[in-house]
Length: 275
Ligand SMILES: NC(=O)c1ccc[n+]([C@@H]2O[C@H](COP(=O)([O-])OP(=O)(O)OC[C@H]3O[C@@H](n4cnc5c(N)ncnc54)[C@H](O)[C@@H]3O)[C@@H](O)[C@H]2O)c1
Image 1 (cartoon, rainbow, N blue to C red):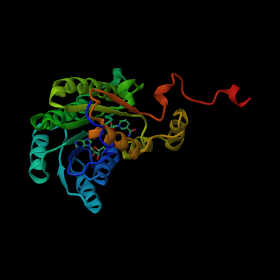
Image 2: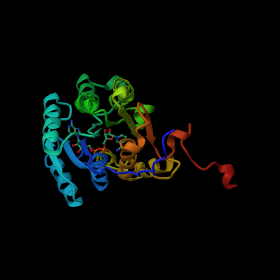
Image 3: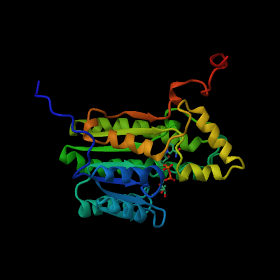
Image 4: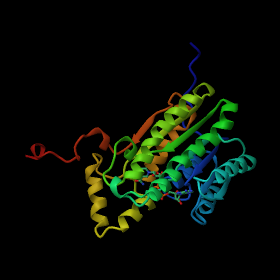
């Protein structure tokens, strides 16, 4: 037994993080949370100006940041962004693959090959490229943490979201397979699996519905905590699992789901409790 050391708490002091999809929603909040905790951050996003905007917000926190604009599913873009981030900020300690798309949606019998390939190209190939580029250097240094954004749609499935559910399910085993390949190098790979989270992605989906507000309220009701998740809820879990205090966790799928995974039914107060 070695002597007990004081619990170090959650700190990213002197760490460098790389976040894809860091221009919006969960990725943006992750970049800002890691910066709050002391990290410098590289951000890759394909929406014009989005990564640069998050960089300005990170700089306001007092940390260094660099922006890359491009497709996280494109091998050359990701390889070049990792190399440039390393040159500008130093070795990458944490990599988070947040870039993700829903695709057109729809059931399997209406899914086009184009839609399937687009969703797999961003969500699965994009995550693979982050894992590979991060792993190459992290394993030499015998340290590092990689986090993939799966979903409750990866742990279970949602009717009418075929391509998305397939892509998010694939990430669970990507994390396990990579976790095993990297375990003896002391690099961890985990999935965080959010349920419904109020981000521009969700707001955009709700805006296509005539009754988006009602749908949002019903999502909140169906979660035992009585609310949907916030980007902060998800970024907090990412910050924990990618930190040195969580280095005993690898190959895991961590739900952040306001309790919905605990119930087999849509949660509601049973009539007999109120009678
Ligand atoms: N919002 C939810 O309810 C929810 C639930 C479960 C999982 N997730 C996952 O969390 C991740 C983030 O989702 P969000 O809700 O914050 O979405 P968002 O749309 O608000 O943000 C995603 C960001 O990723 C960027 N992006 C998308 N495809 C890209 C690509 N090919 N290359 C570079 N950048 C790209 C977008 O420009 C955007 O800035 C996604 O992987 C999503 O599937 C979201």
